[in-house]
Image (cartoon, rainbow, N blue to C red):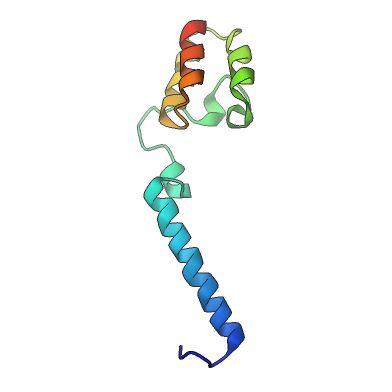
Length: 98
């Protein structure tokens, strides 16, 4: 579209270009919906975890709830954490709880 044709359309075009650029960046670093889907067979999904709303919890909350879990359940949480956020404090706390 030639510049100066219509200011409203130019703004729309600029927004689309920006959105496309952001989507490419997200896909590159693994934040897109497709990249967030489990790719490894047998990888636990959040809904399969013994801790509800896991992704919304703080490290303290996760570790407190992990105290009441069995070893097998903790191992599932550890696998999930390693494949997603990979927080060192959570992983160390879970290893101590196991």
